[in-house]
Image (cartoon, rainbow, N blue to C red; front, side):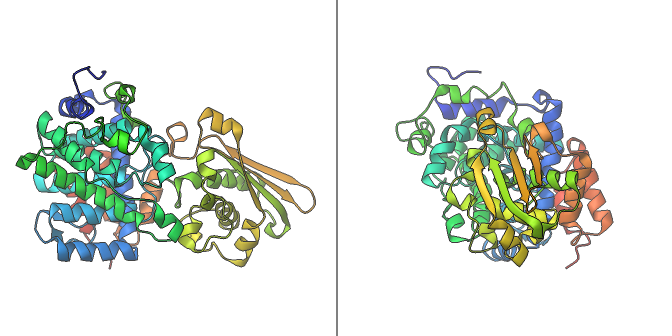
Length: 458
């Protein structure tokens, strides 16, 4: 597909969204849909157990009254917009939701709203998968063009492009026509907002942005269905999104629509913390696994070399973060914690300032790995020098969970059980895993939300 000379970007994207069918999806896309839904349900179960997750459930129940949808785990009903907001916050609360090298975090904005609309509209699994695939395509059509500009300006993609992709996803799930889908996208452009100042200030309000993106998507689609219209030049006009938040519009940016399926190329997070620290976790684990137990007190120096986005801006190489939230972005903390504990889950990160971790993180030198950067890989190399001169090395070319280094079925299931096992009985966990494994066969995807509330241990 290519953008016609008389067709604007909004119409082009809406045309793709309105015509994509489940039968058009590749086998890998359907497989990734099953994995994305299972993974997002798992991160949501874990997210509910955080203070922010429970607080957002209370907020939605109070301020978004209604009976359209169920709050995950909590079980209370509220409006569809309120449930999308709260469930989206829970999905991202641990920072372990999926991640795309081109588009960033996507699932926490799209899956919660689809589960909400799926329950409200009694959608089947095939309808959910198709709308999800459309949302990933929209994300990848818009985000790469503005990615570096957003990074320089401190903008956060989850509530920017997330709102627009969510609007198209919701519109497709609602069965809107091409014109209405385009209006939903255009209306959502004016809802796009959010910055990354939370990183510098050590606040976890980034979790709100995923929920806001999901809620905005439902609001924009419902407004379009009601008859509201958005500006046709919302993306490529002289004051449209590509110009206001990026370098301008290049029709080539949309060439992937219809030629590849972005959902098939998404990645997943086996660890907690920022995605850009994950290859450091993997490389450190590889070093540990190949060399047995190391005397951590005898480590004299640690070198970590990674790709550019993993080492910039400064908070990614800061060996003295102010709190655990900032620590989850720091490569010196990552390697030190993983050396001590062997893993990098939320509980591990809480050890960021333990005396031994503090000593190790202060030994770290971070540098750019030119080979990885040139090849466009998100890998990492970790080198350790001991007091007696012995040297150890661990390296990965791609972070675990990338399409080139995908997690196994056992790893997906293990992550899900770890995140949800404290809340649900074993039979509940088994039922959710089985339902996601046969996602396209479900007649009513509302079953998934209901399963998260069955037998909850509070």
